[in-house]
Length: 169
Image (cartoon, rainbow, N blue to C red):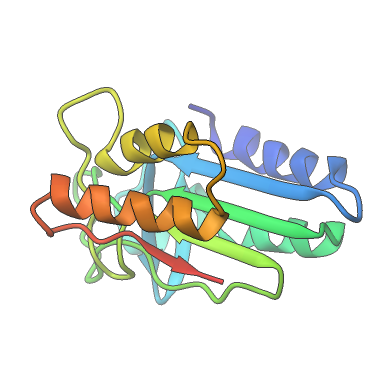
């Protein structure tokens, strides 16, 4: 729950604190949107009334990839639970959900749902994706691929196969 400037500062600080050989984990849960194939993370208080506003009022998700690439961390995990329907009055994007971002070598990008589709917020405190991710992360001995496969299956079952989590690596 941060503003655009606070989000950009936090991403920069995150990248600056990484060292070569680190394993980096970046997690974002909130509203996201794509405009012209570019993904944006939408901060608290953003007044977005049209697609034109988003690149000036939101944070481009590529900023995270840039920070990780510069840090030369050994492995990068980016989790984006940000593929929800647009909450902004008057903003009408012709695309739902986030666009697929290519994961550079050594990077896994996990999406709450398949590219271009919408994720459900769910009735509880957490979305179905985050709820199942938190539950799966407590299971010892799982490889990272197995964690995301188990989350995918659980989310698909919970949403009656309307939401299919996706990874790029």
